[in-house]
Length: 264
Image 1 (cartoon, rainbow, N blue to C red):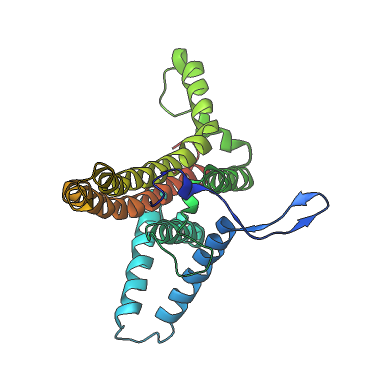
Image 2: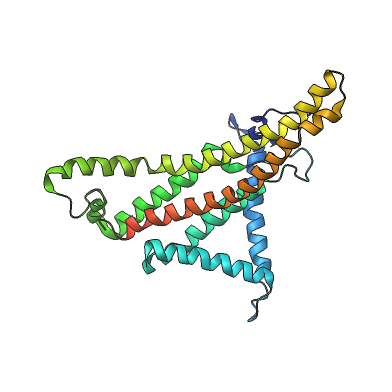
């Protein structure tokens, strides 16, 4: 019988064991899919933009559409000055998008490896969120000096509630990496668990029907509903995979806007 455990898909396995100085530095399936995500992105965009034709082919058109989409996102949320962070935001958006899409394929054509969604692990999303948060702090202080602290003192707030509002702003700023990372992690984790549960219903119904002596056919007929739900949820999860990459990128732009224009 197929494994229907919805949590098993998130397990990290060693591909190449390695230990040094008492530390486990093994190359895992998580590491493999991170490298695959980065490598696949580089290859696809290199191939798509290799011709640089005046009349673009389909691959070049898709690459240019993605480029323009992210550029408009940065410009609309962080202003023209925010375009200096375009490579950073573009890299985050594409990395998360490709990682999410790779995790949508249930089987992977490599021995000993199964599909794995790196963004369903909190340590990965926390690392990305902390990178954004620290970039905001470092660049904000570098560009504005002490004026960067104005992000905690919104303009136009009455003086008698200013301490309370400032406290809220500080808590909100400190908690940004938490909300930024958990949003992506929780959505990808929940979506994949839900897919696995409904797909497991099909196998469980067939096995239950066979164990009662009815044969597997009645179970498969009863499994039409969970199969249809699985198909629908798969389509929805593809949409969620894109939306979560978009949400992470646009929140990054909003946070970077604070470094560029503190107090606005």
